[in-house]
Image 1 (cartoon, rainbow, N blue to C red):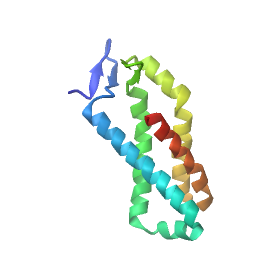
Image 2: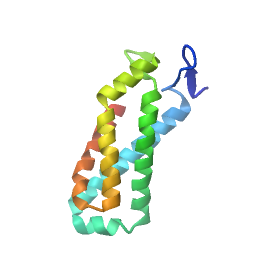
Image 3: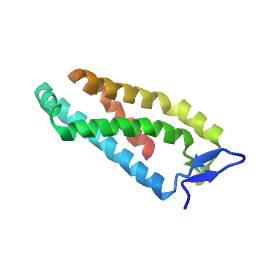
Length: 140
């Protein structure tokens, strides 16, 4: 089983049904659930819980892991084929156009706000992280 499938010439796309990509999507799903759950917890329990979580290694690791994974997801989505009406779309131009038109801006906004939220330790930015839910919708 190959991770990359060959197209015409030297162009390659990521096979969306390969085991490594399916495992990767599982990791992205876990990062989405972590970010969504963490955001819900911080918004429910308030600013004090947010400040306490900044000192907890598990939360810090989860935030950094999510940022790295969501950043890598931009590359993967620009190169991963997708299913459309039961067929794998493997044309890189169509793949890139679809991603850039539909999801790129949302992904960039999410990454930027995750980085700013972690770096500035600003509690109010937790509200913006709710857009992470759009990544979950895209995966379904």
